[in-house]
Image (spheres, rainbow, N blue to C red):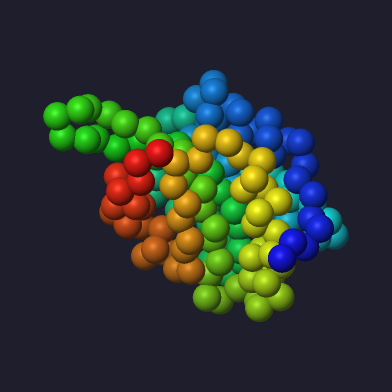
Length: 140
């Protein structure tokens, strides 16, 4: 099911900055006020810590995000995986959850190179250790 929501080109530009140029650590996307397109909500420089990313997610509204997840793999050194987040907190309005759920494919299909997808309904599901487990399990 698709909501017919479009994806603003700035979203794709920001994703390329994160993926190709490695100049961003994360990009958070949201629906525009008129609910017609997905736009960039916020982004952060490459040096940003994971905790700052999680803190930037709103406690009572939905978002999509991409995060350049860096971790250490024993014997292999540092690794990076781009993770796509669907943030749908329990306290978000039902209408917002439904609209974000039905609009996800619009943006997800346009972002090539995603290694893992994280569905989070609370901050524990977006915790570093939880994401680390999913990122290291994924073999893309």
